[in-house]
Length: 173
Image 1 (tube, rainbow, N blue to C red):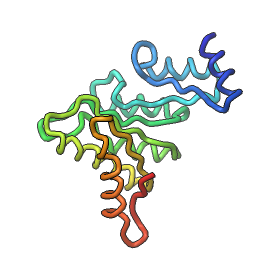
Image 2: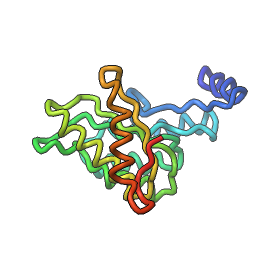
Image 3: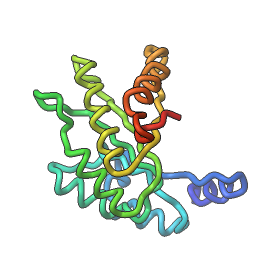
């Protein structure tokens, strides 16, 4: 009932709340979809790849697939890295799946357990951005924590200069 009230109020100010698969009952995509449908069919979910309680890539893909008709935002959360600093799951495969469904919304890149080597961790973010670019995305926005105050502007400049050749590239916004 409280979520219905939230949706009703949100509609009066042009906002639609989006539940995230973030623990408890919401980590099960079937349960999350049934709740959203029961409250209001216009509700969209934040699909956080790092929050699924799965054991392998096939299960992560299946969970994502179930939420695809209801996705409003994708969070490409990485919280586990292997010895080579690769994410604990195949991000590019998930981007292709989501883009193939017709989704054209935003992606959030979140690294929750920073690796010991932050440069190699930044390469993970680069690879996620590259996967999105290969799927046809052309805009990037950086939000950095206060401790990295100068990073956003520097990264935007570097990105625009490095990829903006011959009328192609990524546009920092």
